[in-house]
Picture (cartoon, rainbow, N blue to C red):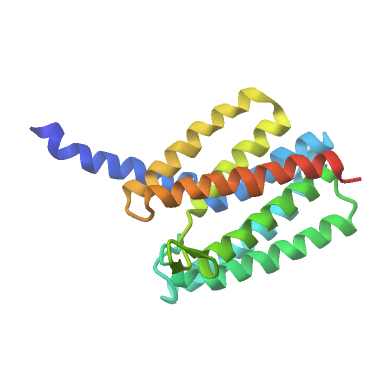
Length: 213
């Protein structure tokens, strides 16, 4: 009887922890230095190129998001209400666009430019799905950014460091489950987010690394 009563609470606690620890901003801040290390091979290069992408892709947008949440412009720092996502998306696109310009002008390794461009493409497609494209007869659909960023990161890590990093897919499953468990997304939304991360984030990264000069 006790376990029946407590298990939903435990599940929600695990889901809440997974949602926070595997949030998009965490991936976007942590992934660039890891890719930069592979691309540059020096601590200085990993920090320099990694921080440029991490700050413009994660830190600056999160400052905008947290300030907006504190002012009541959207429900929380996860911006679970679809209508509240426009300004955070614009902040992400503008900030990361500046980061891409810095990478190009600064002669960054092609892996870093490819990473930033893949992230940018994922943002643009997410904006289109969230506010423009009709899904199921409804214009605008709250695709899961948690699942999308996690899936894209898992694919990029696997491409960069080899097949054994496909184990990171376990984190993708965990965060996708957490979003459904917390009621922030439907199963369809996390599946679509994961597909977006793979198709618009991971595969373009692979193509760009192979073709950028």
